[in-house]
Length: 149
Image 1 (spheres, rainbow, N blue to C red):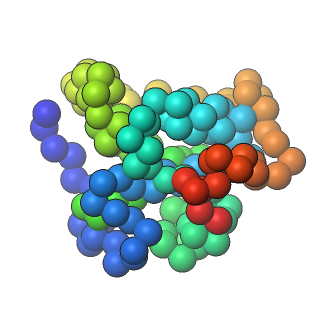
Image 2 (cartoon, rainbow, N blue to C red; image 1 turned 60 degrees about the vertical axis):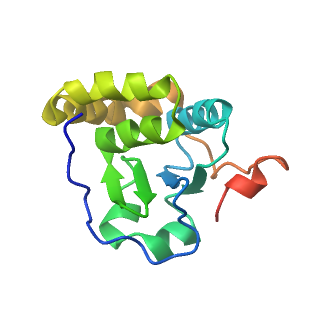
Image 3 (tube, rainbow, N blue to C red; image 1 turned 30 degrees about the vertical axis):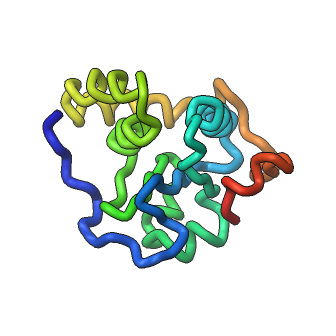
C-alpha cells in the first residue's frame, strides 16, 4: 500500500496514545458517527482503540483547535501521526487488523481526493439521514474503559 502522509508528522506526547492503538475522535452527537463507533467496538477484538467525542476535553487537550472545532470529520490519532476524513477511516481499519486490513487496502487503492469527496458528501447529509442527538453519547459501564472525556 502506498503511504499517505499524516496530517501531522509530530508524534503526540501523551500517555493516552499507545503503540498498540490510537484514539478515534468523532462527533459525539451524530447518529452516523455513533453507529460507526459501535461498529468499530464490535470488531476491534483486541480492544486497542479508544474513543473520544470532538466536543470533549480530551479533544481540546490533544488536538489542534481546527480539528476539534470541525465536527464534520473523524480524526484518528496514533503515536505515528494524525489522520482525518477517509485517511482516518483507512488507518482505523488497518489498526483493527484481521480481515479489516484487506478492506483498508481496497479503500487505499481509491485516490484520496475521490475517497474524501465521498466522505464529505456523507458528512453533509449525515444529520438529515441518521439524526442528531441532544447530547454526546454516554458510554455503558463496559465501554467506559475505552472512552475518554
